[in-house]
Amino acid sequence: MIVAIDASGLKQTKWHEYAARFVFGGLITVLTGIIARKWGPGVAGLFLAFPALFPASATLLEKHERQRKERKGLQGRRRGMDVAGVDAAGAAMGSAGLVAFAMICRVFLPHNTPGLVLAGATLAWSLAAGSIWFLRKRYRRRF
Image 1 (cartoon, rainbow, N blue to C red):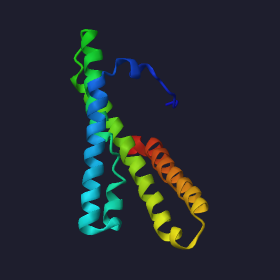
Image 2: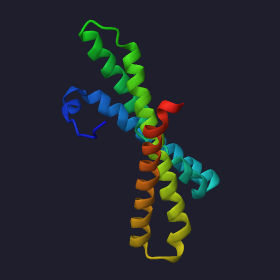
Image 3: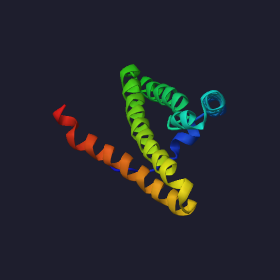
């Protein structure tokens, strides 16, 4: 798979779908704030590893893919679920990277230069998410 940017999806997304993403992101942020007040920022930080836009993007991806297949006269339900599943796998890989980012920040920020720690944490995020992606790609046929 070659990673590429395709902006054509921006044209087919309606304003209310953007609003849904905004609302989901806001609700997850509010929930994280409530968790922080009740159990502290250490616990709430774990919830920041959850992509705030994932619930909305997964449902919208499924809907768009299903509609695209149905316009061609094909059954789009299964394809829509597959696309949402791939998006979920990517979100899980990214979340694992965010956990690595948070751990680096937690350990090193109190005693080191913030810029260097953030650069190192970003590198850790990239290596963790990229390694998981690479391992999944390499070994998926064996499972």
